[in-house]
Image (cartoon, rainbow, N blue to C red; front, side, top):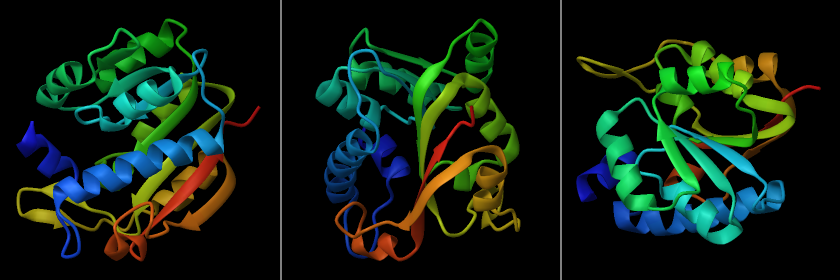
Length: 199
C-alpha cells in the first residue's frame, strides 16, 4: 500500500508523499464538493483512481457512489481493500466501456494527475465522455507538461491535453492550482479545468 501511494503521489522537494496525500486528498475532496453539490444520488467516475484515495474521501464526505477506473490490476485490487464500501466499484477501462454500452451514466467525473500520462489521451477522453450523462461535470487536474511513460523514462509528445478537452467538452473554468490544494512547487506547474458534457 505504501509503495502504491509513492507511485500515485511522488514526493516533491517541498513535500513528502504522506504530506501530499493528506493535503491534496482533503482539499480536492472539498473542492469537488464545492464545484458541484454531491450527495447519495451522485455517481462519480474517478478516472485513474489508483488505490481509491479520492473515491474514499468523496464517499466518506458526501455519501455518493464512485466508479473507479484504473489500468493497473494491482491498483484495482488495492482500491477494493482501501475503500471498503459497497458504494464503490472499480474496473478496468475496457470494463468501463462495457458498462457504458450497457447504459451506465455518471453524473460527475474527475481525473487527477492522470490524463498527462495517457498514451492515447483522446481515446481516454472519449471513454469518459461516453460514460457521462448530459450536463455532467468533469474536473481535471493536470501537469502543464505531458509525462508519457516509455522504456527510457518520461517523454513529451507535443499533445495538448487542454485543446483535446476543449474540443470535446464545454470549458466552464480553467485555473492554476493554488498552493493550498496541491504542493507549493506543483501549484506553478499544473492547472485544473472544470468542464461539462454539452447538452
